[in-house]
Amino acid sequence: MGVEDLAERLSAIAEELGDLAFDRLREASASVSHEGGPDPALVAEEKRITRARRAVEKAASLLGEEKVTDS
Image 1 (tube, rainbow, N blue to C red):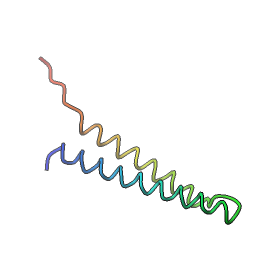
Image 2: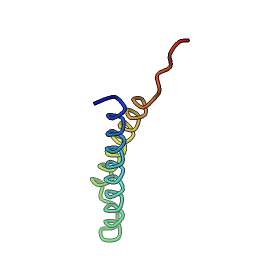
Image 3: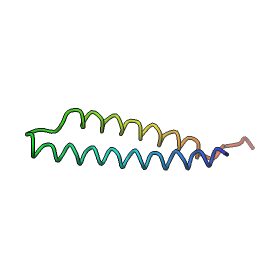
């Protein structure tokens, strides 16, 4: 497995994390109408997932960069 393959896998994982974060936001939004406020646990989990997604996106970006060679 090469670096490019790993960068692609990380990009796919970042997408999955984005979907999870969106699901948590949807759940938190639904909890507002039923309980008067968003579920703090769902909000905290969404933030944690979003931070992880950003870190994975950064890693994918770093691995996907072309190496600059001195000429």
